Length: 282
Ligand code: SF4
Image (cartoon, rainbow, N blue to C red; front, side, top):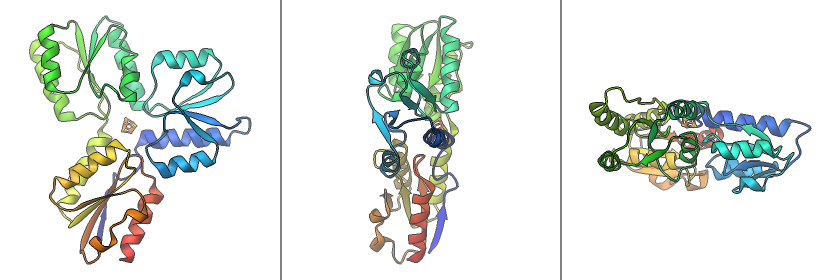
């Protein structure tokens, strides 16, 4: 069987960095467990189990933290007021916000300081979006579609600027940018989309065009992994979402000449390698 493994499969830079910061914290002799994360540090149950066994606990309510306790801010970042409150309480805060999300927060704060209202392409309930909104101190509207943008323009919104959640679709963002630039050629359009997601999807599409079946490795709760499954399915070949080796549809794969493998941004390298090894044994 010819196996094509995507070069973009597995941890993105932000996830890798967040886990390395958590590992470094757990190695510090003066840090006592439990160590907390605000929400899951990563959308992968096997990785979460591994950290749970090492004394890491997930927390939904940041305000239950007390002085001296340690918390890791995950790659999505957190709202500014929560960060300030935790620091004021004397919580040991390890900021593992992805540098690309941090850059978006700072660019947004700079525009907001000039009195501009943010138009943000993003999912209203996403933790990254909640964090970004906290930096838009002159006001903000969250847009999930071009229709949302048209509705905002009908109501009137000025002066404003456009930004996007880092994982948003580049083509949709470009279309929105063009609409706004036609109305105001000087409107600030922030460059906040991360190429990691787009590159992964482009490579998945490319590999799916060369193989008989695709395997996407990653957690079932991972949004970007599920999106990769959809992208692969659009190519018209069978696609299997595999969280662990036990999910591998061995009978369906046996006898195929070529299989493509990719993985979401929260899938560890050893999970991917385990699947590859098993495929080779077929
Ligand atoms: S997808 Fe991009 S912005 Fe999001 S955590 Fe990964 S590197 Fe950072």
